[in-house]
Structures are given as C-alpha cells and as structure tokens.
Length: 147
Image (tube, rainbow, N blue to C red; front, top):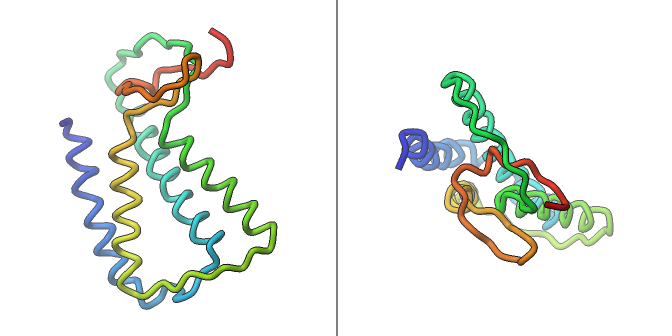
C-alpha cells in the first residue's frame, strides 16, 4: 500500500467525524434523487481529487508513462456518472420518494461511499470482451471507442 493510499484511508474516518459534527445542520428528509445525486457527486469528487494528486505527482517526478489507448473506463467514474444520470432522471421525472436521514446516518453514509470509492479505484470496465479488470495505472489510459 502506497503512502497516498494510507493517507486516503486515514482521511475517510476524519471526514466521517466531521460530518458527525455537522449532522444537526444537514436536512432530515431528502428526495431519493437528491440523495443519489449527492452520493454520486461525492464519489466523482473523490476520484477527481485522487486523479489531480496523481497528475501533480507525475509531473513532479518528470517520468511521464507512455499513454496507452484502450476501450475501457474507470469503474469509479462509471458508477459515479451513472448515479448522476439516474439522479437527474429521478429529479426530472417528479418522483418524490423521500428518505428520512437521522443525524447519525450521515457519517456512516459518507464513510461507506468513500470506502467504496477507495476499493474500486484501481478497476476499469473494459468492453470487447466485456469484463472488469484491475489496472493500477489507468490514469495513463486514453479512452477510445476503437483499438
């Protein structure tokens, strides 16, 4: 496990503790679409921060790995973007199912989303053949529809 991964793992409970303190200020009732939009955006934000960190570290090291072309997408980004799209459809359709969010629920929810993001960060969804595979260096992959 790299130092950056250890730092990220240490930050997850810190964010949970911060949200525990902020919980009384957060809403107690949310539409399903808003909850899905928020959790999906959190997953995408975590991915963006990690990618920006990797890009700055790569520039500092001045060792740019050769770019590879592949027909795959990051699983973390795919899950996050799909969640955002589904949330927009739910919000646009007027479905008004509500979720009751007690104060204690916010912290575990955020830690669970960040934990899932950490677990799936190294996986890519590849098609042709359709499969999920681990690729720790997929920040250097250029997405393409054809090989």
